[in-house]
Each structure stands twice: as C-alpha cells, then as structure tokens.
Image 1 (spheres, rainbow, N blue to C red):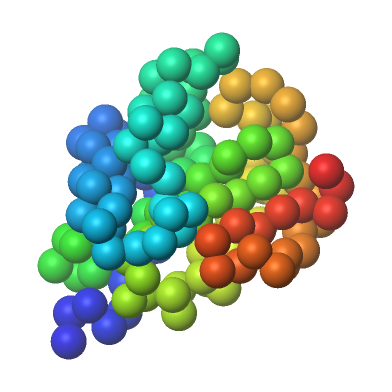
Image 2 (spheres, one colour; image 1 turned 45 degrees about the vertical axis):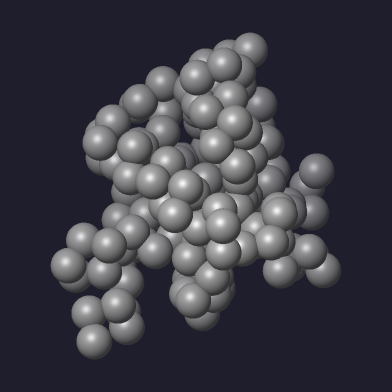
Amino acid sequence: MADAAPEARPLRDERDWWRVRALLVATHATVRPGWNWDIRRSDGWRFHAEEPVSQEGLARVVGLWETRDGRLRGVAHPESPGEAYLQLDPDFRHLEPAMVAWAKSTWQRRPEPITSGRSPSTWTMPTSLAAGRWRSAAT
C-alpha cells in the first residue's frame, strides 16, 4: 500500500505551502478542533505575522511527510520559539514520533530562527499529544 510508509522531506517551495494548506482543508471536517490549525491560523502565521515568514525560512524549518505517490500526510513546523506543531492526517498518527524526532534534529542543527527568537534545546512530550503539540522544556 502506497500510504503505508510516508517519507520525510523539507518543504521546498511555494507549491508545497499550498499543499500544506490543502491538507488542512481536507482534514478540517474529519478532525476535532485543535487537531490541525484552521486556515485562518495557518494563513495568519505565514502571511500576516508581525514578522512575516520568508520562503527561505519555511524551507529551513518545515518538514513534510508524503507517500511515494505524492500524497501529503503530515507536516511539522514551529509554532513559536521552543514549540513544534504537527499537522497530520488522523489516520497517520503513527508518524508523530518520527515528526518530533525530525523537528528536534533539524531545529537543533539550524538554530537560526525563521524570523526571530531562539531555538529549542530540550524537548518534552506534553499531555496535549492528542492535539499534536510538543513543547520545549526550555520555554
């Protein structure tokens, strides 16, 4: 089954950003509130923040999990300094540990923020895992 083993890769370009948005739209009706960001929050984070996120910044810190046939199943990105947010298809929760490991590894190797702030150094798994959140112990 092609969906059985999504592979991780960094966000590459603007087209990938719109694929992330499409994942949020597709899962909106099937997941409980707070599972994934709603479109307003996602668009606000990307386009309307006090310090807008550049495409280059996104490419450094956003990871995608997609199947071999190109179906996007999960996304990991920073929500704020020291905090990761996982957006994913609810049928692919088994990806959460790999997504968190990717975030830890990627963001510790690349400490520069996408806008400003600091890079997390220690991560913990909170009780809000069901919402897809992982927080840094440093915050």
